[in-house]
Length: 350
Image (cartoon, rainbow, N blue to C red; front, top):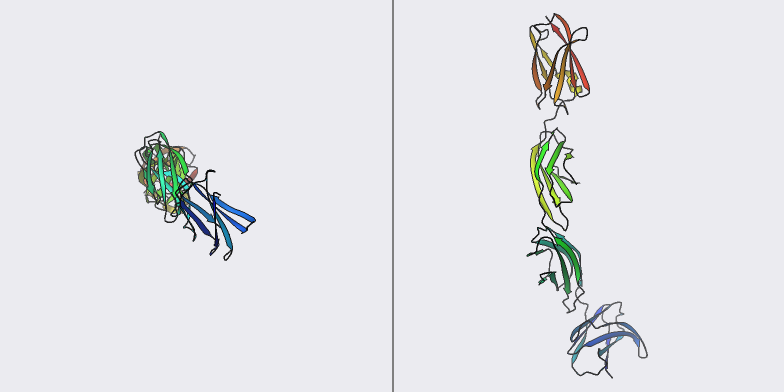
């Protein structure tokens, strides 16, 4: 016959049969009794060399059977060694293969290793290169931009077993950062941000520092909200180009000083002096939230406009002088309009 049989008594619920032979050997395990055996599995992964058969769910103290034979039907002669050993260290295929930081000529491969005491054979093709790695991440170099690559990781277990390859395909591409980043229309709590898009990006990740917030946009411009008045910010815009390729541009800006509201104006922050006016008076205004100009109109008792001014506001407010030397003495109304809000004050000319 072409078979050699052995028995062993389980000392653990998990054990491994390891066959080392100079021919194409097969190892098979059974439970039961002679004449009534049940196969627990077999191993025939290589030609001559090492075959590893892990066994699970064994009953400690129970006798099991092991069969060794040649793969070929023709009887062969040779030596072999069969051992029933303790469970092997963890040896499983890698998971979560991901490509990041692609620049066109290099990229980063990250993965979750799932073995103890072994290694992985990493192959990159085309322009096939092979090397041994044990940890993640791994930098892939010597790539050509625009080329489709396949990376393969093959687990080499500490017990000699070789796992099936796990592969990932990606396109090596360069990724340009956005340029011309500008913050405009600043207010105390928001701003518009515009930029020149990258031709290779499909989206952009926006990060605002401090009070770090992150969002995703697909085009320029966009609005940043939730800012703190009079605070220096850095806005970073990362191009996301696919296949893990990214590139980042940034700009700094300072949010505007907090501006008063029209309700605050009504609380007395508008100043008219002197009042009564003799020849002229000066109007002092605080800043107004969300407004860059205030329209000032001086009306006579008939409601006719006798003087108008468009007053540009700054973060500290504004001042302007009204010449009233050509006006008749009497009471006038100064109307101030900021956006859709209106405020009036009485002015006396003497």
